[in-house]
Length: 201
Image 1 (spheres, rainbow, N blue to C red):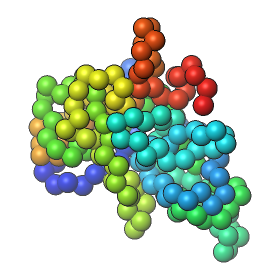
Image 2 (cartoon, rainbow, N blue to C red):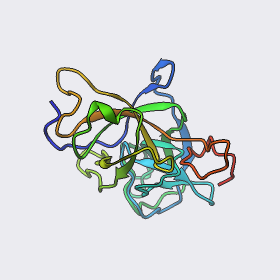
Image 3 (tube, one colour):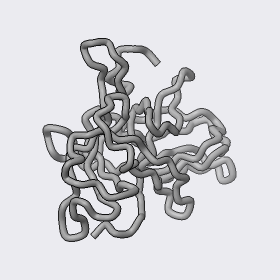
């Protein structure tokens, strides 16, 4: 059961409406010597330079997707390198991030507190925590205390991981979520995945 606090970021597990996640990713460039580490399961966004960076938002995000690794030429060995994380300030001119950018991706995450069945369909903020440098994975989580109908919150809870090792309402509930978006017809501000937002970057 999910009674131990062990967040693991956002883990792609399916696609809304069609079930299975095929593992498809898109490559995005990262700026040479980008100064923030990005871990497997972190959220990334496109910025004005045409590259991606870690999205460090909590109650607001502008995601293009979930980071699941990168490749670059190692400056020390001059060899192609594939890594589960991007290490801050590494000098390379050919950095590519592998990003799950399907706006309908369903991802699994752990909440930082219990979420009851009544939380289904509500929106949540994100808890941002530095990832694990030893295994390269994110430690971001769902902010359970932020549960609300507020449409500007970035993540919607669409299901629970209900099985032998996880039960609805566990101390640190494992949940299934999607990114919110796009904005609604009223023109009010809403959370939005970048590839669904009609406004440019």
